[in-house]
Image (tube, rainbow, N blue to C red; front, top):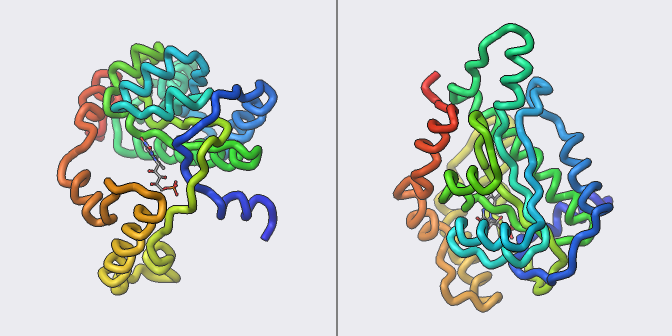
Length: 246
Ligand SMILES: Cc1cc2nc3c(=O)[nH]c(=O)nc-3n(C[C@H](O)[C@H](O)[C@H](O)COP(=O)(O)O)c2cc1C
């Protein structure tokens, strides 16, 4: 296995960080990796907001529902959909941008954001740093927009904590790879048995790391997916001019 594959196979989210700062050189390399990532139509329709200021990180930790690791990790990178940037190009070409009012627009920017997130993760982990992605910033998107000065046609989609690992954790098990990889044709026949087995396995994992609040995979999803867990996303995205009615 080469070094890149070894790093990817060793991924685990870290929620305990040392206070040591991340050097400018390291951060520049991590961001340069994501800057080089592919982007649909070369639109470059996302922006990263790098937050190192401790007070701001503490506020983001609060907005995300009290996630202490955001305040603890020395760097937080916000990945935002940026149709403000593309609008300038479209206007320059004498056209009117409508893509930000469509499902296609939100989807394609979310894919680009995901690619950037994954690239930041591999880059940071390759430098021996720990990371944890943060979707919970979408709990209070309006406050995030104000805090980071995001203009209309932008939206804070997902964040990433980066820092030096304090307490490491064992790898979290995944469901059987047959529920992930389908060759030639989708086949869900093994799903129920795989879910049963995984529910047992994840409970063992919680025991192993001493997390007495841990619940089974299916119960966890039952808790979250029975509602739209971040209901502010749609109205705040609409206030930013990002619709999905086309
Ligand atoms: C888009 C995205 C959003 C996430 N949001 C959060 C979050 O808000 N808080 C958190 O502690 N972990 C968050 N995570 C981390 C997941 O919980 C974690 O990746 C998953 O449980 C698998 O664990 P592992 O990364 O250690 O393998 C997020 C992960 C992704 C990919």
